[in-house]
Image 1 (cartoon, helix red, strand yellow):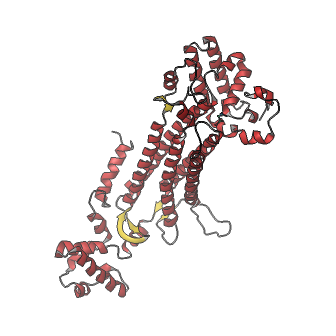
Image 2: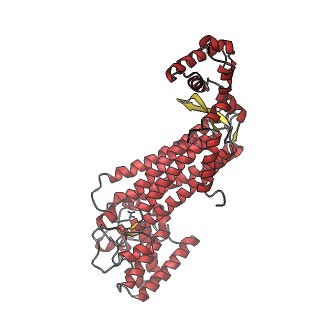
Length: 469
Ligand code: ARG
């Protein structure tokens, strides 16, 4: 921090005689965080100054000087030469102070009919709007990666689990598409939050509006908002747009974490379903044989960090009387960090999924274990022998017990052994006991059959712009 300013030069220093304590400066300053929305602040100031000039509140000459000065500030920030000063608290006062240094008098007119309360939340809404958009496009990229894996593995048979016990055979393509569906809802939530937040608080001023003849429609339009917010108290104190964004990120990270957990399980020696590439594994400092799925584990942990950021913001808002209070300054750190974490987790997931090598033999063998086609056998009894399902369930249970007692799987029973439980059974029954037949048969809409999976893949490719229309 260069050129620390003394209290007399603080923007609000007029009524103060003594210097602020160092501690209050540290607790009050947000510049280390909110410097990330410098460009959004400048956009807001440009729109505000243009409007003030248009309305005859400041002169056209002053507006020109302000706009040119903001060009210079932009340049300095880009070049890394802008003097960020902690004593000036936040990005708004840093930029305004620098503008005064650069262009003098006209800069002091910029804050007419504006308060930091509407200024900060204008910049913050602009920042969050863009962040939501880029979070949603990161998710689209991940969806494309998942669809590509699904395409390669549309008929790869793997075990489907309930209670983490083998339940029924499924296809790996189907499993991947389950996440594509989740991420579609997630990006829908983020985009809905972006469209709901798109109202302009600028012109609400400190809390009550202003006596100057401002044009809030003009600034709203210039900043790409749909309309000015209709209540100035709400405009400066609402942060539900940030809460909603954090909730959306947190829900999506819950899904990313489930996938991460599956990657952790699948890449273990006990499962052996998948191997992560070297680029996505880490070693152990003591055990030379180890390949650890650290990225997946960290995604699991980071998911709850973002949830805690949602809870932290919700906690600081729920008992806040209208309108602005400084508690709200903590909103940006929580939000910025949550978006950073989110972006990292989405990228890491895309990278891992894109490069994972599935072991189809292991998947198939594991799909066949644990009597996974027992339901197919029960369905067969219903279909071919017209047995009521409950009875078929019972008969199949006895066949499973018989196989288990002999230490083998259902398809290893002889037809005679089967007939000892249900005399009407013939050789034909074996046709439904393979895992391939099992997945092929599940052709109900949304089911795991490769036929249905391929249909879904084709639709996703269109929706995700993966094929020329
Ligand atoms: N840095 C402040 C924030 O992030 C800007 C608003 C300050 N307003 C005030 N009345 N002190 O919330």
